[in-house]
Length: 249
Image (cartoon, rainbow, N blue to C red; front, side):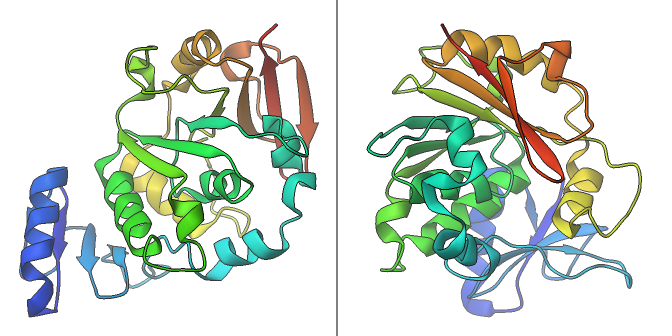
């Protein structure tokens, strides 16, 4: 169980409510190797280590995510082509392994209705906090309105577990990173240590292929094997990763 703390007395009650909601415990002081800290700006995931890369948080309003929204290439970018965006198309996309929500935000910024799903309570807390804060930012409020969150394990997906059947299901399972290189972002290293690899991700593909109306898209490191050893209909490659696309005929 992970602790949540705050140094702001006015945030003590919200932090306690958050602890109750996600199964954490509240502490007046940081506890454990990983802990959450609620501030006025963000919910932070911190690591109690002098070599820690710093706090991890989700911010849909600024930084890399905002830059990607403004200058990422729109529907011409590879990820947009992979999920099947067309000039005037609107899609319902389920991001079944939402993580930090970055790709889901891209889909929503391009006009899709996006359902974010996560089974990790830490990811869920970071995401819901970030979505709530972003909903109050006039510049992106319309994008956030197209995003909804479901706290669930995608392996238990059925047609009855969602209000709408998605056109596309997007999977980006945690892949084991055995070397701490500059190419492995601090979020991934921290999440891998805290949450662990998605070693059961092979169970997802058949479930998602049955449920999606049009296609399943799996994001993989460029040299990684196919998920569950299932060859896709096609792949779109980038420098560091690829999108394996399973089209439903």
